[in-house]
Image 1 (tube, rainbow, N blue to C red):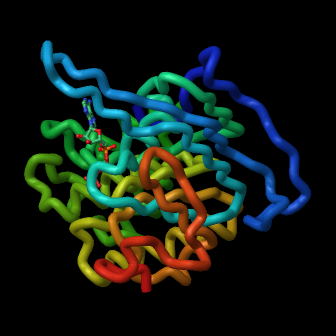
Image 2 (image 1 turned 180 degrees about the vertical axis):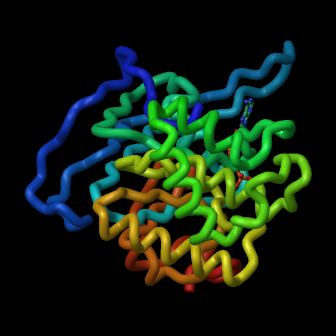
Length: 250
Ligand SMILES: Nc1ncnc2c1ncn2[C@@H]1O[C@H](COP(=O)(O)OP(=O)(O)OP(=O)(O)O)[C@@H](O)[C@H]1O
């Protein structure tokens, strides 16, 4: 599922007011996860359950760019799936105020559709009309430089170009909060820089952006860095993360 998530007893829509429009500490919270817990039960008779989240809390505010780091298997993707409503938590709650865009680590694209058809399919799912879909498609294709591939089938694209389409689909409907799971893996340098220009534009428009990454090379691009370790999140913006020595928050 990409886009707005359904309500459920543990999943609420509704605002938390704030006076600051653009990412300051008083800006409105657009997505909040509170005390989230998740254990994957083993399906094997003597298998081990995997306790992934043990009380993770996060609040993402309008107009801020938040990095979420953590080692392999620390639960970053699990957390993101719970925040967008693609997976239920065992405990805790999620409150969403606005529309969500989600760019999952594994692309949710249909191999047999062309790029243009992919935009049409997802755009209609978002409730956009034809001219809005075409405007979003052309703007994103130009920014991320895949205009030449609009008539290509998804299964004929390179990995980097598939990732560009995956990212574009997540943000074509102008979401209030955008959750990106390893969004720039596979991007060449030019595209990596274009990605950050786009993120800066979104921030200026008041969109909140949360980015999962194994390592963060340019800490200054983020307003806050949160580290997921032992099932909980902590703010490591000022200290770098425990990965800093080996892999580098620089
Ligand atoms: N559907 C599932 N069933 C059982 N275990 C799972 C499932 N999905 C994830 N896990 C396990 O939960 C843990 C957390 O996985 P998750 O993908 O959330 O971590 P991650 O931090 O995103 O990892 P990576 O950085 O390698 O992408 C891992 O041990 C993984 O093997």
